[in-house]
Amino acid sequence: MAATTHTVTNQVPPLVGYDVFNADRALAEGVERHSAPALLDVTRTELTALGRTAGSAAAQEWGAQANEFPPKLRTHDRYGNRIDEVDFHPAWHQVLGQAVSAGLTDAWGRPGGHLRRAAGFFVWTQVEAGNGCPVSMTHAAVPALRVEPDLAAEWEPRLTSHRYEPGLRPAAEKAGALFGMGMTEKQGGSDVRANTTSARPLDTEGEYLLTGHKWFCSAPMCDGFLVLAQAPGGLTCFLVPRVLDDGTRNVFLIQRLKDKLGNRSNASAEVEFDGTWARRVGEEGRGVRTIIEMVAATRLDCVLGSAALMRQSVAQAVHHATYRSAFGGELIDKPLMRNVLADLALESEAATTLALRLASAYDVIQSAGSGDGGGTGDATGGDADHERAFLRLAVPAAKYWVTKRCTPVAGEALECLGGNGYVEESGMPRLLRESPLNSIWEGSGNVQALDVLRALQREPEALNAFLQEVGRARGADHRLDAAIKDLLTELADLTGIEARARRLVERLALVLQGSLLVRWAPPEVADAFCASRLGGDWGSAFGTLPHTLDLASVVDRARPVG
Image 1: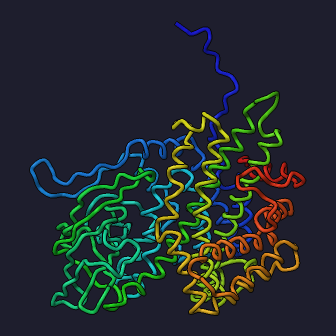
Image 2: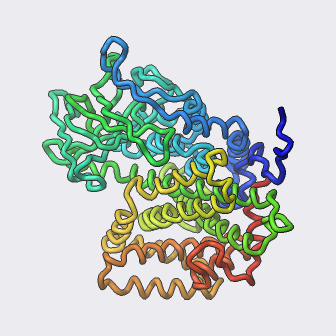
C-alpha cells in the first residue's frame, strides 16, 4: 500500500553522468597551461576518457562498494597453512585496475608523464581515494629502484605497465606489478632512523634476511615492497618480494589489518619479517638517501589527493545548492550560501593550481635529463635546475598546507548539504573521513615544517628559486606584494624559528598560491584569494569573504558541468 503522505520533492539529483576532468575548469586549464603543445591533444583525450569513466554511475558505485565491503585478512587456509592473503571486494579490483590501465603508475618514462599522471590521479581519486596508496607507492618506487640499475631494469617495466594483474605469483610471470612500502615501526613512527628491523647479509652479494616488525605496511597484497632495516653498515633500503622467483612465498606474516578512520577500501597492515629474503637497494647506511625521491613523489601525491578530495567536496556542495530550493529560491542564489561556496571554491582552485605546478616541475626536470624536449609547456618559466631547487621547498610547504586545508573544506561542504550531507548515502561522510589522511601520511605537519626549515638552512638555492617563482607575479596585486614583503621579514628573523615553523610554512604556501592565481586564474578568483588569504579581509570560518567581490563568478566557475 502506497503511503499517501510520501511525496518526494525538492531533492537533488545525484552528481553522475558527467566528465570529471572537463567539468573542472581549474584542472583542465592547468593541464593546457603546462602541457607541451605536441602532447596536449593526446593528454586531453586520455583525461577526457578517464573523466567520463570517473563521473559514471558505475564508477561511483565501485567506490561506494569498495568502502562498504572493506578488505579481509586470511592468515591461514582451511588446512592450517600460513597464506597471509587479503581478500578484496570485486569493486576494489575495478577501481585499482582502471587506475593502472589509465597509466597512473606510469610517469617516469613518457613525455609529459608527470603532469598527465598527476591530472589522472586527481580525477580518479574522486571515485575512491583508497586506491591511491598502491598507485602512489608503485609510481614513487621507480626513482628509488634506479639507484640499482639492475633492479630498475627488472622491475621498472612491470611498475609502469598499464596491465593490472592481482594475485600472488612470481613477478617475472606478470605483465604488471604493484609496490607497497614498509618503513614505519611502532617505536619510531616518522623517526625511521630509530628502526630496529635487522638485515643479515647472505653470501650472495646484495642479498639479506630481514627480521623485525613493521607497524604500518601499505597495501600488503602488492608484488614487492621497499623496506628500511638496519644492516651492518647502518639503515639501508631493501626490496622485499612477496613471492620468490621459484614460486614459494617469502616470509611476510600479516599480523592484522588496521581499523582506520577512513581509507577503508585500502588494506594497511602490521607485518612480521622472520628470515625474510630481500635485496639491497643502494649502499648500506644510505637508506634514507635512497628513498628520498620516493618520499618527495609520494608527498606530491598527498597534495594531489587532498586537492582532489577538496574538488569533489566543492563539486557536491555547488551541485546541491544549484538544485535545492529553500526560503523562496535556489540555495545557490542566496548571498550567504554563495559566500560559503565561493570561499570553498577558492581553497579548491588554489590547491589544484599549486599541485599541477609542482607536477609540471617534475616534467621539466625529466625532459632536461632525457633530452626529448617534450616535457612541458612554457608556463613555469623555469629550467631544470630552477625546478629542482623550487621543488625542494615547495613540495613540503604544499604538502603541509594543502593537506591541512582538506578537512575544514570537506566539513564545510558537508554542511552545505545539511542533514542530507550527514548520512552515508550522500558520500560526504566518506570524503570527510578520508580528509585527514594525507596530512598524516608521508610525514605529519611538524615533519613537513621541519623539513622546510632544513631546506632553508642548508640549501639557499631552494629559497632563491622559491622567491624567483613568487616574484614573477610581483606588481600585479598590492596585497600579494605586501605578503611577499612580510614573508621576507619573517625569513630574516631566525629567533625561535622552530617554534614558529608552522606559521612560516603557512605563509610560504599562501604566498605561492597567491602568486600562481594572480598569474593564471581569472581576475575574480585571484582578487578574492588575495583579499582574504593575503589581505586579511577574512573571518575564521568559510563564508566570510568581502561581500563586494564577484562571488557569483567564482561559484559559477566551480560548477561541475561540462
